Length: 385
Image (tube, rainbow, N blue to C red; front, side):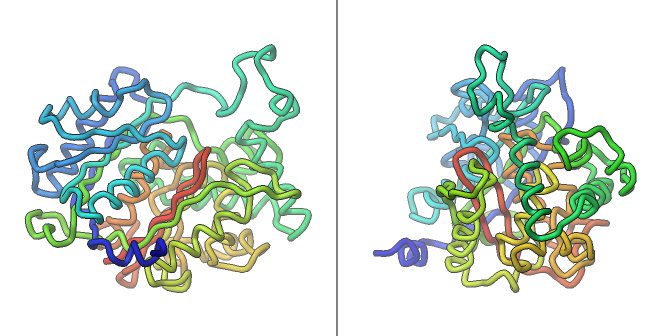
């Protein structure tokens, strides 16, 4: 049996509850404090309690072993299976994917997925000291802004994208983040402010980099056949695609390597029975502004090489034909690595429910897509009203 056939034989799975703790800096709060607030909000949205949860999956990256057991313990200790999930920045979306599999297979009816992180300041991938650095790190590789910047420079050389196009991603993200009460940054910035900000890795300036953040997010997932037990308006998890980078002699490598994301998105579209033309709203992994330019190409929203122009023309704006990162994305909403994947899903649920407030996408969106990348691969999830 093929994976597609197996997926079609599974039960329909949906999200019925969502909740977040505001992203930002919370030095006086523990991971348990953050998750408790997010999970209780998800229970309130779903109209359930912890007693309704049959299995749990906890996304986390820098937290210690057993984080899931610890943060779920803030809600209750009923003896259920709780698994910790780690896939760097894609940890929380992996938790959703695994929960979708086990509920879809009929092993459980109701699952709780949480994601949490309290991040240290500084660059991801930076060595602790020069003595501990690998050769590639000493050469500027393996450090995330450097990886994205090198690919951005090549994109500029090969396709003519400009600094202004990459900067426009940050302008859009911060404009959207100003409409999101859960975002870490809620102040719009101008194109000039982005371009003139401190250079991090040419051509990427400070405003084009996601911050290190604290935060938590949670979602209640169930089989569609039991969704009537809950108050929350169900949104179906219609398809998924996951994979790891493939070798390319000209690629930058790591989680920004091109090629495999296009393959993974094709698999997700096939399982969901839709194409890129059907997507009404999208959350992409804009850890750095260049990542959004690459993603809109790899997801099939525009031809290869035209991602910068796509953003520049406003096609990814809330009122554009393919709205992207309507909640501010990683750059403005914030990026607590273990929580980001669920936060992305939460924004899609808000948009498909039609309750996103001032950042609501017009036209009654019915299909949303989530693109979440981490060291170890990418998850793409497609949702339907």
